[in-house]
Image 1: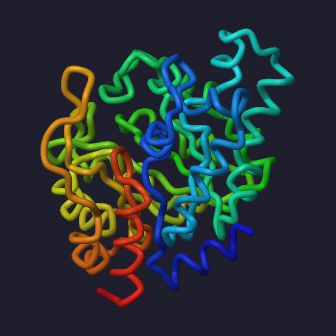
Image 2 (image 1 turned 180 degrees about the horizontal axis):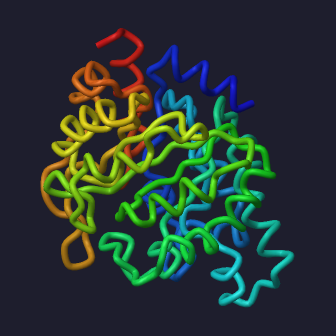
Length: 293
């Protein structure tokens, strides 16, 4: 499983999907609350299959599960018992498989995402590496046992949390990628990218490192730094370029297709989109990468 994904990555680039939340919202689903897209694991799993299937139909080779903001603790706060919560978290992998995904990436969002208070874009939670590792390890174990091809340690705002995550994936038997959210050439917590990516150097479980949930203009430099520091292939899946302002997306949108050739030339081998990037944009990206553009 993992070895197959690593081999496919080496032969890449592979097309990632886009934003799950915007695809669900476009289909009319409400995503309010602390579980965000993960609420549909309990309420409407078929909607998740349909959203994943839209990206597969557009050309995505790697589909990311609806577990980004999910945790046993989060489900318990919503009245779901522990055993049921564990089953729901693990079910995210099977739903992506049901959609026909060639490769399934089990999404593991940062500690701040589970808090659902915006701190995922700040980091600096006041927790130690050991405390963060203890938080992440149980849900990583649940997701790994569900049989994904890769674990997506994504939207990480802080090198401290990145260190906890790379410790937490040890010995799980599933490869992982590590992806920071960045702004102005630094992590959201303000660390230099070279310092942040150094956390991933020499970690045998990691097959790629890079950035997501950022402006497209941040990606090229970050990819070059990631490859130079770690020697690993890079992963790149930014937002559309729009900005979240006063409860809505504002500004001009630019899909990843127009940037993909530069990112691949810099070392990206997993390319897709995050917030506000939908199946249409992933279709354009897939067409560009298929022609080697």
